[in-house]
Image (tube, rainbow, N blue to C red; front, side, top):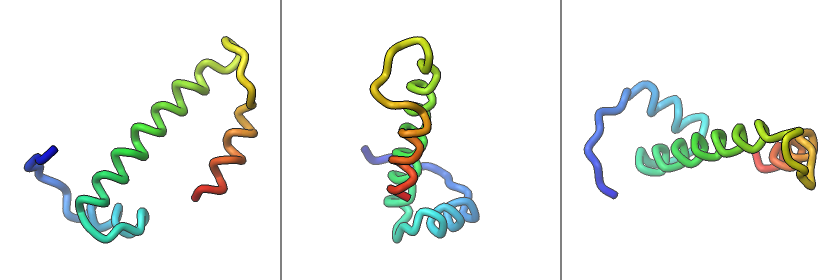
Length: 68
């Protein structure tokens, strides 16, 4: 999807630095993916104790710590 948006230049620079991305497009896409992923994880963790899961929160956090 193409869109014209006004971005905070300083925030984009900082995001590119911490995400280690090369372009604004890559930065925005990575930041959006991270935001969506974070919300999904929060929603799953909110179910802790309400449904039976095959992994614990600690196991999940250990697994995903390896990715970063």
